[in-house]
Length: 368
Image (cartoon, rainbow, N blue to C red; front, top):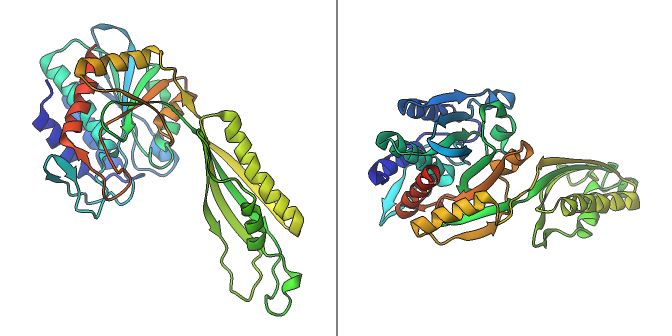
C-alpha cells in the first residue's frame, strides 16, 4: 500500500539535508513543512536553545478512529559526524555513500518510514489509531533533545522508537542506563631530571588505579570503558594532573552503581598509596528501561510482524536512545529496527527492501 518510489525519494531528499547534532534547524523546518502539508497540527518546542542547538523537537498529531490510547511514533533527525554534504548512491538495491560521509539512515530511515505511513493514511483516508509523530533533535549528542523536550506536547504513554540497526523485525525491549565518570588525579610536580623524588606523578597514580580495574565487558548486562586519559607535560616535568573520562552502562541499576563505585575505589586506593588527591564526579546520563515480552506494546508489535510476514527478533540493547529518557517521564517505549547497517561509520548502508518494510510496519502499527 505504501508508495515505494515516494518513500525512496523522501529518504534520499532527507539524507541530503545537513543535520549534524546541534545543527538540525533546516531538517526541522523541512519536517514541519511536510507535516503541515498533510493538514496536521504541528508543534515545536525550544529544546535546542537550552544547550546550544539551532533546532527543535517536532510533534504532530493524527486523530484516529480506532479506539485506544495514543501511540507515539518517534525517530531522531540529527546525524553523527561526518554528516554534511551526503551524496547517496544506489547500487543493486543498496543505498550507501561514496565513503566520505555517513548515510544518515540513522535515523532518517525511521523518519522517512513514519512520513510515508502518515501520507498513505491521509491520502487514502484509512482508519487509524490516535497517533503522535515525534521527531527529536540531538539524540546522538546524549539524547539532549529528549532531555530538554516539552513533554506537555505529548498525550500518549506508549512509544515506538524507530532507531535500531539490523533488518526490520528486531525489537529492543530493554536498554542500559549510563553513568559518565569525570575524574581528576592531582599529584605534585617537580623537575623530572633534578628532583623526580619530590614529585608525585599523576600519570603513574592513574596507571596504578587503572591496572586494578575490571573494564570492558563486566557481565552480560554491564560494560565499562575509559575513553579519555589526558595529561600534557614536558618530559622534564613530573606531571601534576591527569584527567580521566569513563563510562559505565548496565541494564541493572545496582550493577551500574556498583561498577561506578569500583572505578572510584580503584582510583582512590592508588591516590592514597602515592599521596595524590582524587576529584571524582559521576553523572547519571540516562536510566535503563525494561519491558516484559508479554506487555501489550510488545504483543501488538509481534502481531504486526505476523501480519506482514516478518520474523521477529527480541533483543536487549547495549546503547542509549530516546527510549531511555522517555522512561524518566513515564512513557513506555520499545526500540524497533529500520534496516540500517554499519551505523556511525562511512560504510553505513540500508537496503531499499528494508526501507519499504519499515514503512509498511509503521503503517500497520498505526492502522491496527
